[in-house]
Amino acid sequence: MTSRRSTSGWLADAVLYQIYPQSFADSNGDGIGDLRGATERLDYLSWLGVDTVWFSPLFASPFGDAGYDVMDYLTIAPRYGTNEDAFALVEAAHGRGIRVMLDLVPGHTSHRHPWFQESAHNPADHRYIWSDRVGAPVRDWIPNQGARGGYYLANFYPIQPALNFGYARMNEAEPWRQPVDAEAPKANREALREIMGYWFGHGVSGFRVDMAASLVKDDPGLVETAKLWGGMRNWIDAKHPECVLLSEWGDPKTSVPAGIHADYFLHFVGRGMRSLWDNSTGSRGDWWTDQPCYFDPEGRGSMAEFLSAWTEADRAIDGSGFVALPTANHDFSRLTCGPRTRDMVAPGFAFQLTWPTLPVIYYGDEIGMRYVPGLPDKEGSLHDGEARQGSRTPMQWDGSANAGFSTAPADRLYLPVDPDPARPTVAGAQADPSSLLHQVRELIALRKATPALGTGASVEVLTDGYPFGYIRGGSYLVIVNGRREPGGVDVNHLTGAFRPLVAHGVTVRDGEAVAEGFGYGIFEL
Image (cartoon, rainbow, N blue to C red; front, side, top):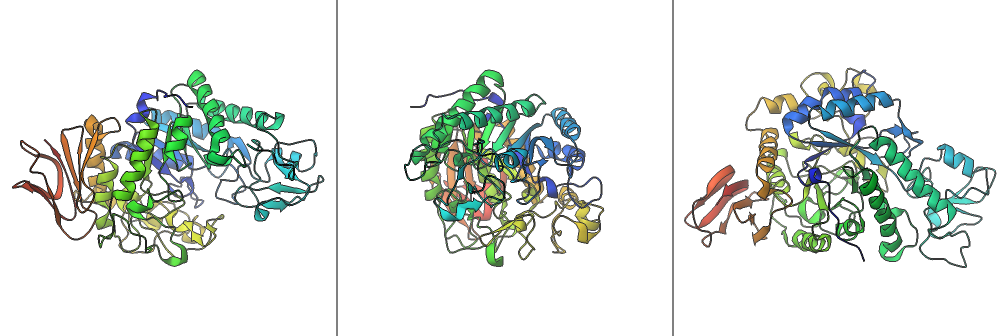
């Protein structure tokens, strides 16, 4: 059984923004984004209205998997700067009312991490999972090049050996399995606390936890994994009560009751996320799939699948944490992708920023940056046919060379800038009051000024079709139309006037809320 927990007050009202550091802002002209570049752009984030940023991994790494192969958890990768640059960014962000979260990769390290180098040569070291023969699944066991021989278990790529947090079940056929309370698993849990404690001590407000469900092996129902994170939560509550964990677990109904503060709906667990914007990874150069989603220009979807998943999670969480809803991330396609242009995505933001979930905006989505197909593999971005690099292109700041991302020659950029001459930029969008950027900024400001649109207020669904209509906090009507065809919602049962707070293509008259194609509106009752 798990008990209901209280959660840091600031998280309930947060609007988060993910920065992929390689591609956000380059201050020194080497073609790769860095911390000083991000610091220089904090005023933009403050203007936009976000109050929490999380960075994809910043730690020292060989970058075989874009930094998700960590070589030193306590040192900033030189490509991004120094630890002092990180501390300065945190201080500068705090001065603007912005919290900073980092990305923690707890389940595996780089094969070049000193821990692994020691373990690969020392049969007495069980920090990783070792066998003298190939176990199951076979593809995940990698021959060891070190003196101890044998094989190690990898979590993702062969360069990412799995740390040993134990097995939930023993198996006589696999004598290398250790229980979760063995010495090495306990040591690894303590190492995670030391890593988090170091960065918490330097002002970091939390971690997005990579592959949080992957730690304990052969764990039916993830019972032991949940206990592990419950123990981490107890430690955070006792030692760092203002800090939080946001997990890449993808199953909030399991992870949040276990102790995680918030967990994402993600594309690889169920249909809750895909049923909204169907963000495939753009493999084979084409994003659109045959699976229906609500924000489909042709209107092939329904909100029913999302509502079912969200209701199940919300009941399980019971107020002890939050479901996080991203527009996209570094692993799947942006809102602006396939047949959906940036002129069609504002309703998606209207939904994200008025539904009782934690909104997470992926860098550039707020201006309508698109998923760019056909790019070369970069640092492990192409995996099992999934071309993730299309969502990792440089931030488009202005109309200057390299879209203002870097002064480096174009051929030295981390990834090419979107070659579309009509690509949006921050400068261009700021100069256009009707732009997507201004609409997103308006929605963020409205959410922050209106508690009934946040995580804590009630929600009553009027219809799950086109348009999607719902009441927040008993006092606010939200209408969102995810398709190009107009439609209406019967609101005859709602009495009184409808005062528009934000209305883009939605009007209320004669007992009906009428929405134009891709229209949305928020009305105070």
